Amino acid sequence: MLATAYLKYEEASELDVEEGSEGGKSATPLYKQAAQYFERAGFIQKAAESWGSAGEYIKAARLLQNHGEYGKAATWYEKAGELLDAASSYQQAAMYDDAVRAYRKGEHFAELVMFMKTLGIPT
Image (cartoon, rainbow, N blue to C red; front, side, top):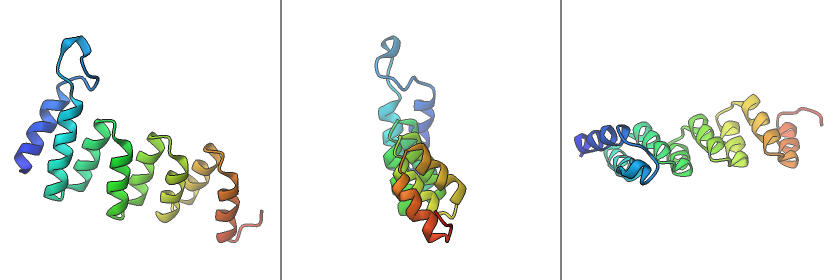
């Protein structure tokens, strides 16, 4: 199973991600298959990387978050444009500067104020 995952990943890395580009085969389904195999084998980091390569940023983030990798999950949430989830994950990872940045970038000011109050910072 793990060998199959690596074979799918390598095959995908040699292709374009976009379907039908220059009439060629798309890498996206191969990355998704590799991600599934890596997940089943317990290779969470590689599975998340594969989901991300397939453009499935939320799946990558949730997988990492479910395994306690909050900081890494936050980067995938950011890539997906899910800044509130990114900020929350950064907060769980105790990456407070990044949490503040994500709250501000996403214009989630009410959540930012609540977060700052939990840190004891006057608002």
